[in-house]
Each structure stands twice: as structure tokens, then as C-alpha cells.
Image 1 (cartoon, rainbow, N blue to C red):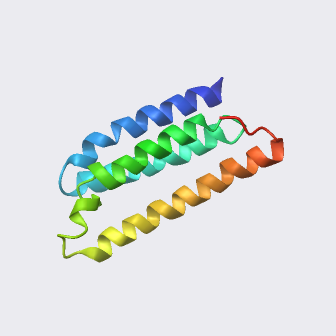
Image 2: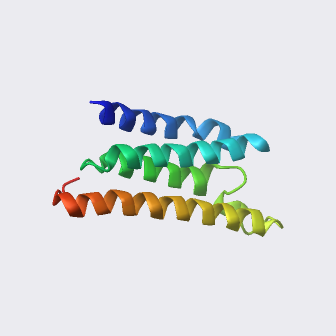
Image 3: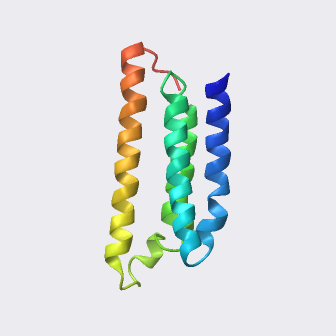
Length: 116
């Protein structure tokens, strides 16, 4: 019951991260880290056999990073001179996504439960 509440909270938090991500400046960075936090929460909620929370939060955070976020939007990558910031934020996102994905998949492989 607690993990379900945490999973739903992580999805709602991932949705709430869209608003500050669309703002310019420091709010977009706060939205980025809020999206990462929701990804970590969803991995915690999904590590016992319900990967639907991680899948939903992962898709929402990916859309947030690539399409909505003011600093890491994919269309800004080609027109912006500050590539180091954008690439480093993509790197942080990939590291967190990979670690959380390994946490979820490792627990699913150990338990033998492979349903989504």
C-alpha cells in the first residue's frame, strides 16, 4: 500500500515538474532535478515487481528533459552555444535513469516476475 502511494506520488511529481521546467532560468534547473527525484521515487516504488510506476515516470521525465525543459530541450541543442551545460544535464539524466533501471530490472529478475 505504501509503495503504491509512493508510485502514484512519483508520477504526480513528474507531472508537476513540467511547469517549472518550462520557465527560463533557475526554475528549469529545479524542474529538471524534480523530474530526477520523481524517477528515483518511482524506482523505489517499482523495485518489488510493479514496473508500471517506473515506466510512467521514466516516459514523463524523458519528455520533460527532451521536449519541455528550457535548458535541455532538444531543439535548443543546435541553436545554443552552451553545449557543455546541455550535454552534462543529459549525462546526469542518463546516469540516474540507468541506475534506477538496473534497480528495477535486477529486482524483477531475482523475483521472476516479468509482467508490466
